[in-house]
Image 1 (tube, rainbow, N blue to C red):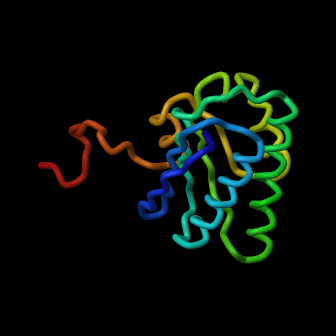
Image 2 (image 1 turned 90 degrees about the vertical axis):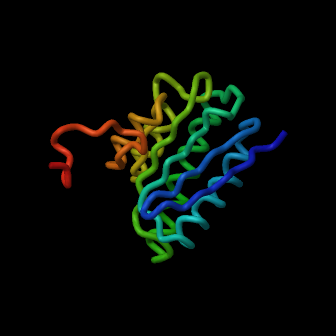
Length: 143
């Protein structure tokens, strides 16, 4: 089974849900789809929910994916196609490398990206309020 994306634009956030089996080839193909959606919807932030993905990439695949993603983003930004987007990847092991090697490769090449295990932490890093956040006494508009 190849990777499949469901992409939902939500204001400045592009919500991407991925499922299927990760491979380097599929990862690159679907990343280009994400960049097209960023350009189309003028998104500034991307929440990539990969908790339904499976696979166990080796270190070299992590390197090549991080390098590819960072270079593709840089090319789109320098070409004026998109602004500089912020990416939050939510993944489960073994796709999410505890050592964050792929993330480090991408960050070292200028990509604004971080990996997480939980959606809530990813949204917080993106500066997005969780949808089901409980109201507190300090909420605006409350008596």
